[in-house]
Amino acid sequence: MILTGDKIKKENKKGNIGIRPFCDEQVNPNSYNYRLGKSLKELESFKDSKPVFKEIEIPKEGYVLNPKKLYLGHTSEIIGSNKYSMSLIGRSSLGRLGLYLQISANLGHVTSSHKWTLELVALKPIIVYPEMIIGQVSFWKNYGKIDKFKSVYIKQDKPLESQLGL
Amino acid sequence: MILTGNKIKKEVKKGNIIIGDFDIENISTNSYDICLGNKIIKYTDDILDPKKENKYEEIIIPEDGLVLEKGSFRLGSSNEIIGSTKYVPIIHARSGIARLGLFVHVTADLIDIGSIGKITFQLHATVPIKIYPGLKIAQVSFWKPKGKIILYEGKYQGSDGPVTSKTYLDY
Image (cartoon, each protein chain N blue to C red):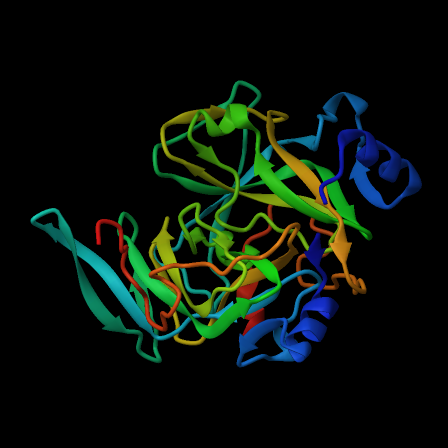
């Protein structure tokens, strides 16, 4: 079952969901709107088959994302839950501008809590601004006993590159 | 919990799910198939800016089809009005369309409870593909929510065709 906005608000108060900072105005009927953090990484090239990223701090006046490029960004908020699984996606307003917020990896595991890495792909050049409302996260009830998730991505607060092969 | 096709049918009858014009033939085991309307939108600005109203043009898809070039991005809409005051709709491509490399949304599959209108498709062709008016392009599933329902009253309510981003209203 997917949580309604009202339930997300209540569970955040109880501590079963942890969205920090939390703002009532960012609650939707069945999701919560998150903001774009200001650090970006732009995939520039590969060296010895390892990706080389350029680090960018998004200026106030915005930064243009270009098509055919991969950028890693992050949510401004820490988002997590010990009770619910999460699905992190874009907003319809940004989808309508052709901006992907993740690459078919929307599932957030129960017990994980961090600033989420976003995989940004633009279909047309688009300006992004620091702290803009850019996507939404929904919360889903679990069925079964919850075991703690062991992951290398669990304590991240900046865009984190792929840790495959480590 | 996801609704079965049978439950979708019953909830349409009760008015808890709104699908216009409802056609029983479009029910599948866990979803309802939706068709592409005949109007599409192409942005004409070189750089899109979420803080302003971006320029665009409307194109009517001819009966004999329109080719979306590889990598192109267009907005389309469903023929049907879709919504629910009790369940959360989620939009998916039909598997047959996905197998042709066409995205029908750009990481925005979730519809708010209480949002009722024609769905705006975010069409992204990864290979050249021909689209036709009325093409069965997508499907909508319905999910049971937990918690008190507060219905959507947002900026896209009552959409009657493809609608461009209104994110500039947030600023």
